Each structure stands twice: as C-alpha cells, then as structure tokens.
Length: 115
Image (cartoon, rainbow, N blue to C red; front, side, top):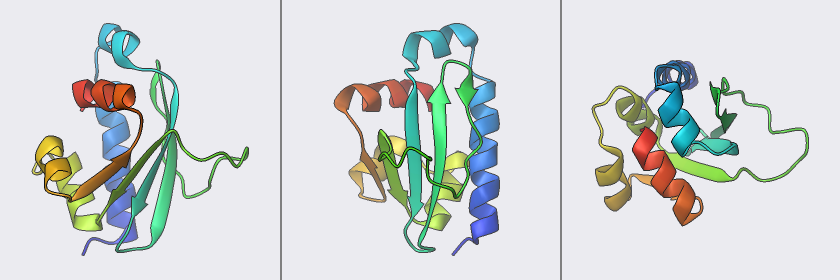
C-alpha cells in the first residue's frame, strides 16, 4: 500500500503531465471541471480543478462552495501510483473495476483523450 505522501507525489506528477499537453489539445478537449480523487484504502480524498490552462494542484481541502466534484475518481493507493507512472492502463483499470469514475459520458470521453 502506497502512503498518503506517495499519492500526493503521484497527483503532483499528474499535474505536471497535464502541463505538457499541447495547448491546442487542451483547448479542444478540456472543459472546466472540479475533480475529486478518493484513495479508498487510505480513506483520503484529494480535490483539484481541470481547466484550459491545465490541472490545478490537488489538495485535501474540499472546495469552499461545498459542491460535489464534477468528476469523481475512486482508486486504491498502489493503483493511483501505477496509473500516473504509466504502469496501469486507464481503460483496463476501468473495465477491471480497479478504478471507478463517476462523471458524465462526455467528460469520460474527454478525459480518455487527455490521459
């Protein structure tokens, strides 16, 4: 089981990976969305925001407006680290039940193109 700190580092790496996406691709596929990532085995949830400029750093503080996230991911710590490191394929993880994403169908399609 990965630690909370390792999960924070993986999410920071994900933010950096989003920064590397071509601006034209971000403009084409990104719609502003709030994101939550619940790491079920550690019972911790991280919150972030996806927008045309990239992905804001994740924090453990829920949004001040109290609204639920537009895109909710649930994953175990080891799978989060493996997914960000490219060792776990998102589509296979979804089909295998290792990752749960609660989002609109359109958001799922957009995310798939970006990850």
